[in-house]
Image (cartoon, rainbow over all chains, first blue to last red; front, top):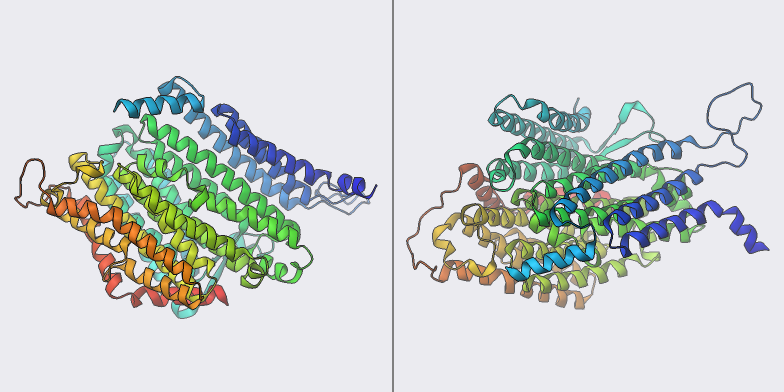
Length: 127
Length: 494
């Protein structure tokens, strides 16, 4: 019962870590370049989720000053603010890597890492 | 007034980068001249900052006037003042070299884009060195990773795209691991400012040792991937060898070092030696450093392409720096910081002279160097000076850093590391010396033994010669920069 309670209390952190690991697994194991970019995005989401969860306060309001509302407990706005920056960064990385994939597809005719490696090996062998 | 200079430097570099796309109507020569003036201005102002910090002591700069608990803060200490000078000085030399070298590697329509990227690259490196905020470091790191990858892929050849893509993926895994570490530190301390977080870590680390260890693990692995420390080095040879020569010099001599500065900041300023030793971190660092020193050199032995060999040699040399850090003593840190500077100069000289061989003779294969010393005496001489520096011959800056590292190892009483250091030096000799011997003592295929100076453009020749002179001068008078490094180490260990 104690363990279950612990899990429920920390479910955000566990979920974030799970997302991070799933993303890492996708980046490392998949040979399809688009899937690897998706993996990076999943990893990023995991980290952002973790960061935002740190700022949560149980029973807190969104951090907008509203004196009519009696509840004066607010969640910590700083992590959410930081994560907005983080999301922008990951979006720009995604855009850049997708444009690289477009170029790779134009030059090699495939977006599979294994097939690209085969083509490169063949070329160095021909030299 | 001088307190404003760090941010003005950043703004100046960023504005230049953003103005270059609008200058297409002006002749490109003017743009290059303007870029050079900007770099000289930044160089002079970093010099002023260094002199100011030396006489008046370190200072803080608060962006937007917010207090350090919530705002971003620059900490301009002797460490950051000295290393920004190092970054900008090498950056300026490489910039001068690149103004002609890009004609060889980059299409004409991409010249402007190349310099936009170069200035953003320098901007983010300066930012990383100045900043005293963990999340701000992450943002600058991401700017740096996008620009480094694009400065590789700008060459528009098949291999560059795949090298840049692999570099980008690993870089991104590294950045996100670092950010995860930052999140864990923020969870424990509630601060992102390095000074404030370090204070509260000192108080609470007994309560949350698991958090600190996991955070440190994520941050060290994240930075190690980006700094190409041994088990995470796989992207480096491809990325550094396919890039345009000026970019390779920039990537190998400065960019990788900036990540090591982040590592030094995280380990020593955020966590502190006492906690690191209680958590047994130095042992792990020693193991990865020692294996990197050997394996980098062994891989370098088997290479046929000159720039790939230099890339693998970088991995071994980064091992030296990490070994110096892992000793956790003031002698070890002094050796590590000195080696950052001396390896920066030597690797820049090696890559720039390798670029000269590629520019004039399209010579990349290691076995094609016979008699090149007669046709390209100046570049080959600088290549040899830097190569001898890598081996650690007295009279070059490489000797001073290896000597200091050896003294630090003896001081820490770990003789087996000294054996590894000497073995790595021997391996260095095994792959640098044959090139020099072939170039100066063997006949070239045309049997032409007439010595003649190479017809290299002056803007390419001057940086190469300046770097060669600097390696020898620092080797003969190491105390000129040692005083700054010792002050920086005293600041880190205080």
